[in-house]
Image (cartoon, rainbow, N blue to C red; front, side):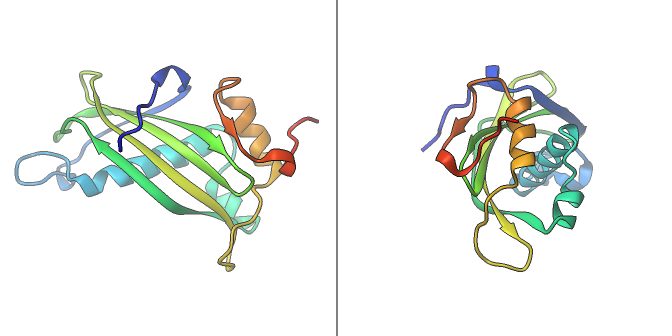
Length: 159
């Protein structure tokens, strides 16, 4: 079931140009490439917050994709300059949900997506709490009141 995403809460965006290697015989971006676009936006989102994913892993953590929902509303074509908006809409003690909007070169919504990421310590196959310093940066960046916080007393982002 499609969950509507309201773009008024998005602060982060990045752009990229679709490449020839990403399209099918009709010149349409193949659906599998969209997941790569979401990952590019997610890594750039972290970088924008000063939370490089490489450093996150160096501290012994990683995010594992638990759920992915992607709604293809309109095709994207070869050599289009597309815009990807990304935000974190939900945080629990051990997981975050990213929402994405991808616009074509005419600024028409082409794709909306959600990804549930679970925080884990590298080498362990069970969820662990998201480090508080990362949560502080996310909550400080996103628009006040725009994140569904379901962590209860698991963390306190006040100094």
